[in-house]
Length: 375
Image (cartoon, rainbow, N blue to C red):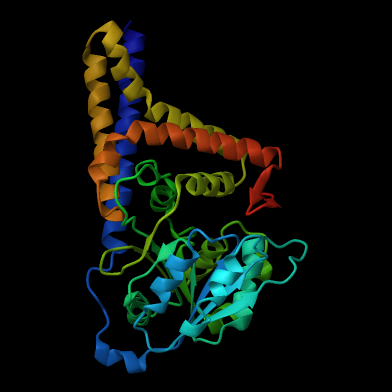
């Protein structure tokens, strides 16, 4: 019995160390990745560089109109907007062309060469068309406020950065796609380190000349699942990369259906783990252990309340509180509801890691209908 008690105490001791690690990572992120005030004033705008907003699109009729309406409403004076239709099978190209009167330039994607991921090839095609000093790459499900671009440009100038990416907020109301959000960006904050900094594909801005001349565009990372992460890691070596958590002031948000979040997680999780089976198994084990407190509390219904259940309840509350701290930064509403679902989110993530791993091992992962592999 003593041995069992020691194992239980040791397990909850490890959970305590895990909570301390998460708390440290969150506090670091909140301190270093937050823009606390607007950094540009109207009088500064005439000194700001030109910006090309570049949006790759493939079968995006569900989100294209709202995205472009937000971009067109931007108050930034030196702006060009380019959207590349990557062989869509729906009416995406028609929607893009309908914004021609607002200055949106339509670019038709070319045949995908061997060795390229579809999105990376689209990003290169947009780079070839862009003329701005800076490029803002955006996903179609990303929304920006009228002054977002000028704030990003001013922040880059203030920080002397060559690249900046933004973790978007969820600004929509209570819905299942929000409450059951994956832990994609939570893991970005947890994994952040100097040689592999946190990054986000939703909205990232980079110096165009640097991307072309120093990095050769996307040709050297044509098969990377997260090309923006690779570029960020290279620039972070020279302290010229910055990552921001979206705020109401910054105005970067996104709306993504639950199914789309699941597809994205399946595509990213195994490669993020280095495409190593042992890492995936270790993460699945850790996620399973994180939910033992919840299972222990449920078991109290049948076995009665003991000291073990009290320890489990304490750990469950600690992790839910840490998740609430994160949600308070990235959700504009109902963060406390999301925190109550912490065990459900952990279980969902466990399933997603399992599916991502098995599909990559079977070479059955697709991206917008195209097969991809993990290196």
